[in-house]
Amino acid sequence: MDLNSRKIIDFKLVQKGMVKGDLERKACEMLLEEMVEQGCKIDLFLTDRHKGIRYDIRTKFPEILHEFDIWHLSKSLMKRMKILDKKYLDAYLWKTSINNHLWWSSKTCKEDGSLLTQKFTSVLQHISNIHEWEEDGIIKKNVNMIH
Image (cartoon, rainbow, N blue to C red; front, top):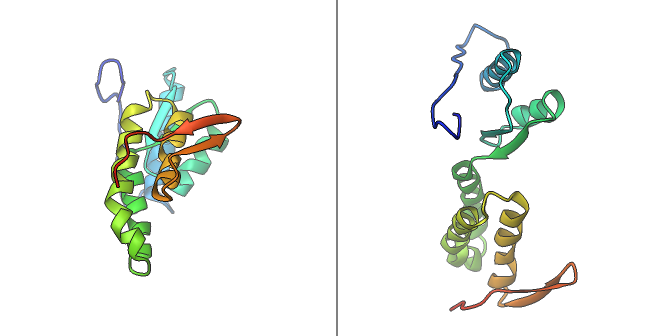
């Protein structure tokens, strides 16, 4: 989808038997190759966390910024938390808050990936009841936290 016009500019449907191997990866590769061939400038490509697609974009299209869909990231995080929460009560108790923090971090990062990472990883301090810490020589704070 073009972010300015909010229109879908192309898509690929690849069915079993059309190609050997991973259909999702092949469809993505075909789409990107065709768009580049047609002269489209692709600044950002948003996908799920498919390892093959990550590899292809990194190696075949290094000029394209590749980011992950927050819904898939959240789903993956909750899957991992589910494994932990069976063994650790604290993981069970914090699971929803951690997921909410991921979504909040995404909404408030102003499309800055490093800010998103900083905001989200601050949850590690918060769940440890640390609300002021130093990172790269800068004092960081989580304020107005109630728990």
